[in-house]
Length: 288
Image (cartoon, rainbow, N blue to C red; front, top):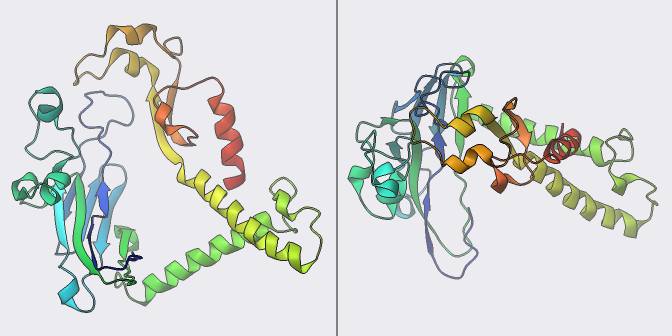
């Protein structure tokens, strides 16, 4: 984080980890797992247990340096469940809903988060006061229980981070360079003249191309769209509007999508247009 302004700035940092809510649907097909659990096992570490993913740990580096400008990390917990009472006037399944962190930080309601420090959604709340021009690094780590490091933020953390950066540089050097395979070679690398002016421009073009590829990777998401379920609605939820049965994709009862895709237009979820699979395939290919 960096303060680019001329005055001191207070920043509320809330790196968040949550389990996707599948337990509230009431369905029985693949993907409707038993309710997972997050729980604090210390002041800066969270144990994550999932029926199929197994056990993971989420760790936040403790406060380093002068405590005068930083408050200690506070782990906040709630359930990743809609606040039905607030939105629809219904009854919540739990006293702790998915908007709890907003209520705690913005509204000041300490009772909005679970005092037992368990749930299906958690955040590491840290308040930083940055001086003008000051930069601060906060480090986090998510790791499997089977690959637990000796220490979360020691020498191993730095080595792994540097290794991942090096691998990314190698990948893009091969992808965008003149020696790359023709099917993955960037147009910036083809027919380039070896002049100083072009080389400088080529470096800038590479940075732009890397950002574009990063956008494709960033837009990848888990896409779960089961048309029969979408039409009928989830057993444990209110019924959908009757017009849905004659709406878009209502004639696609064969579709059961449960995969990671590059979504060019996320705002259109959960509908699928006939042109979208082609876009997904074309856009995913270079990044893979």
